[in-house]
Image (cartoon, rainbow, N blue to C red; front, side, top):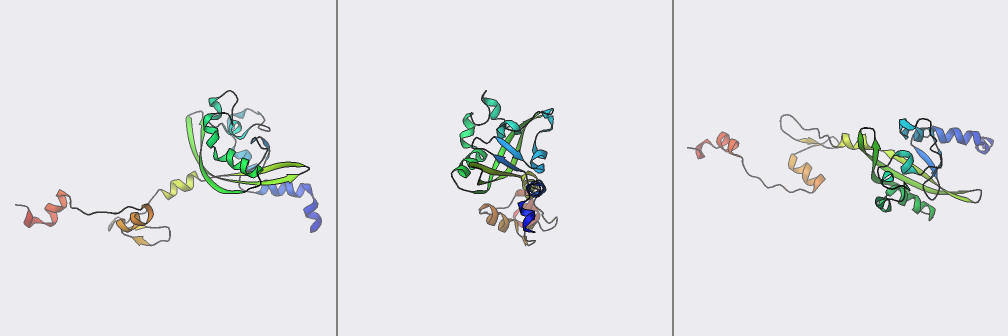
Length: 197
């Protein structure tokens, strides 16, 4: 078994078996290598154009990369880019674990916001420094979380632990909202007939 771990073919297969998009990048977020899942993240309209040695924003069609002729890393918004800053931290020897951000990508239909978690980890090989960059798309997960199961009869809301809470409890717990109660005109007429002449 130890000889298996000395085999570069084994590690290439292992790298491609990882279900999350993984990139090997340099300190300017240029893509040096990527696994199969990351290749699936690349825009389909490339026309065979190589993404190797392209900066991440240029390869993924970040809308900010198109704001300047120099591309990814040179637009004003790039100073706050979570991906770029996470890679920078990796080159300083730090790891970033699942930092949440939104990538604004240019598509044929306009701009698409993709919610992602960014992880970076530094590594050293053959006298050179690199960073692993993992980008997890959580857009669908966030969309599902935005759906609230509500009882059609009593209007209680089911939380993530399958407990039913009153509307007031749920929003008070999850959104730090305090409710005050009043009564609308329809309910006043319906439930307090004696107050309505």
